[in-house]
Length: 187
Image 1 (cartoon, rainbow, N blue to C red):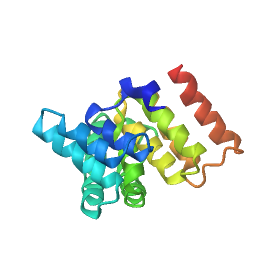
Image 2 (image 1 turned 90 degrees about the horizontal axis):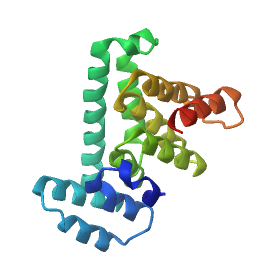
Image 3 (image 1 turned 60 degrees about the vertical axis):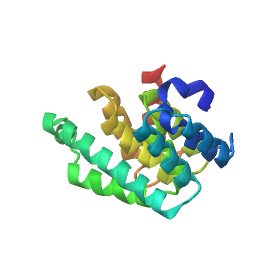
Image 4 (image 1 turned 45 degrees about the vertical axis):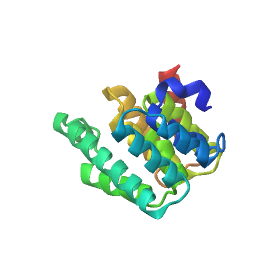
């Protein structure tokens, strides 16, 4: 999957994602990080690889980084007022995202951090559902809602999150319909 969606992923975090999926060893991931020229990107890459290996400091850093990014992006969306128009409370969404992120392990956090496109967000969200990781699927849906550009894809991710909020039950028609809309938007 990483090879198919690599174009939609942030390169500095790809080593961590490859380690998380067992494609390369942690040592190879660190080696790939060392080859990054920019010192900030190199440090972020190494931190993400450490988080995947469940280094507690690195996992904490990643959780903080993701919640800060979410907060910044949701505030930007809130300025336009479209979240309110759709009936969503910004504070409640921030609180829910924090709960989800703080309940995830380093491997799951690396998946959220690596995303660079809404298509990749959807692919990793579907992978999380197939793998039975509902918390990660919910986090992808919520993060996708505020991270992607444009009201329509944001609204579609919000619909998927809303239908998955209690339980991501693929037998539930409303949830399947929300996923189908999101999928057909991307194809």
